[in-house]
Image (tube, rainbow, N blue to C red; front, side):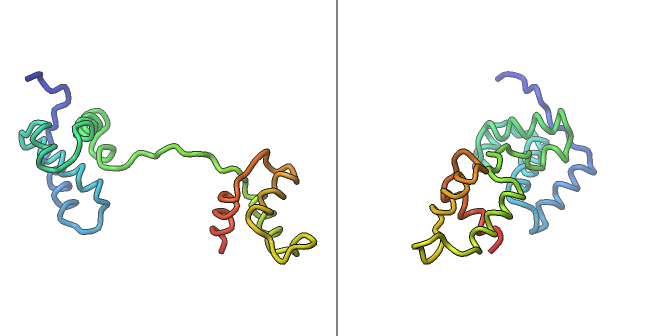
Length: 143
């Protein structure tokens, strides 16, 4: 078996903090799982045993070990920010969209539909293309 590159060696304070984290009912489940991974790794268990005990994946165990050794306990426990798709409309455009939705509908229509609003956003030049789903999500944020 190859020698582990990232060896978890918890101090007594770190161990107490992790045990307190697990015993509280408040923290996120992923943080609790990471704490359990560190406790089991410090207890001498190998990655395969930790995977079996916690029903998690091997890359998760390896990632938690590496982050603990390289960056410390807080970094190993917390979730990293994830990227995402940037919003299509900025705050000013969202405000205009809401005002448009509250205004009188176009002639021949009883009310604004999401597709009509999306078409109006494109027509006004706020964005090259926008889906009705983006309009729905934007309007839902504001009730």
